[in-house]
Amino acid sequence: MTEQAQPIGAVPKIPAGRDRRPTLISDWRRQEAGSHYMQGALALTYSLPSGVQADPRSSALTLVHPAPEEAGEAPDAHTWAARFLQAVVEVVSSDRPLTQLVRWTDQRVYAEIARRQQRVAAHRRSTVVRTNRQQVATVHICHPAPTVAEVSARVSMGGRSRAVAARLVFSRDRWLCTAICFG
Image (cartoon, rainbow, N blue to C red; front, side):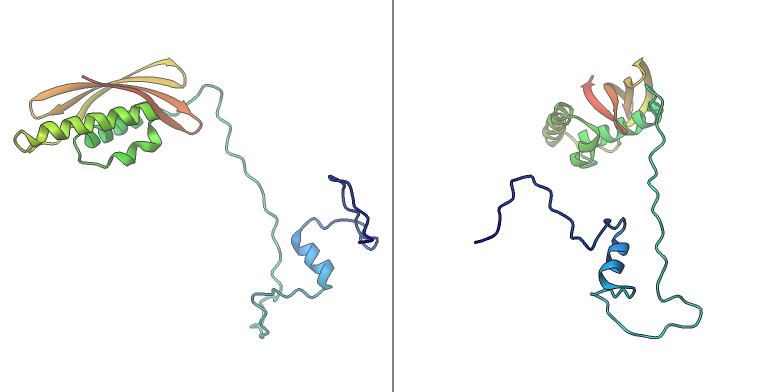
């Protein structure tokens, strides 16, 4: 109990033998173990074929940042909106699992699609089995802001058509559906 207590937050002193901290782990290992480095988990001794170096040279890693997008520019929403609305139509008609939309919708939209799917499934039980699948026939987009797309689409099934409207907001790296309305 003769140890002196250091105050909390005190920086430990570096031993006198070390004048600098190693910049790489491999430098530290060489300092600690001398010039011969042995990997503890794979400590094997074997002869190498001629021409192959026993010590692979360490390569420097380069951090690459994604290309910065210009302020207010989002990728084209038309193709993505058509595919997204086709997926929504397939979920509502129980041809696709609802969980596939969780990444692309906020909580309110996800809940609205789930309610719509349940209502369609309950109605379908009391009617004749369908033979055709619903298809997104046309898509129209309006951009009230550079990162916002308001989408309207016509969905056809056989000889009937219905409308779907959605609001998409570009957030971080993807379009996110923040509102949806079925007609």
